Length: 224
Image 1: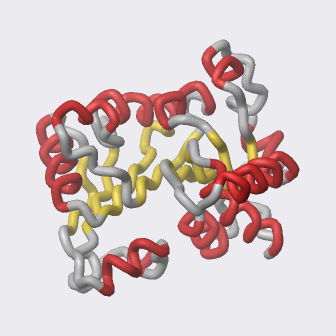
Image 2: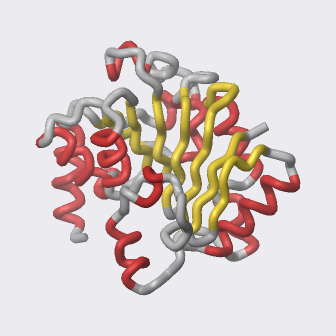
């Protein structure tokens, strides 16, 4: 994507009512007005809130919002030029139960209050295979603790990935730390009885992986 196109999207994002872009200072210094107020101030309802972390183009968040009108969805990504597409689609199609937050996942516990979130989706994250990159792996122990803070006590995390490495790493970590694994499958499209919301919604990249016969893995778990 050219820099001109990116700039245009950044400018457009600023005008979108469904996009929130706090500064790092606002978040770190607890000046972010929506923290603890997402239901009342942003969605203006009391429905459960579901996050998609690293939402990319936002198509998964938008599709979930269409499928579950009685839940609120927030796609989170640092790359605003990417989720511009999802935000624009939601506005054009008047899907009011989805929004987008531009921030780093590392700051997620500054953007949401304790127990404010019901469920988290992590869809096709970078597996960060190199050892030096483990601190960026989205299911590492530090990230799980951040998620635990913002999730309700019985909150659920979903990991959907094409990376068998990421799947295996996460499963090992969950077993080792005695977190509660509710469901795990290393080839969700080949297995009968896979959760419907996992197989009925596909991202752009996911459909490409499936065309290449790449297995899609899935884990559903609670952080203890």
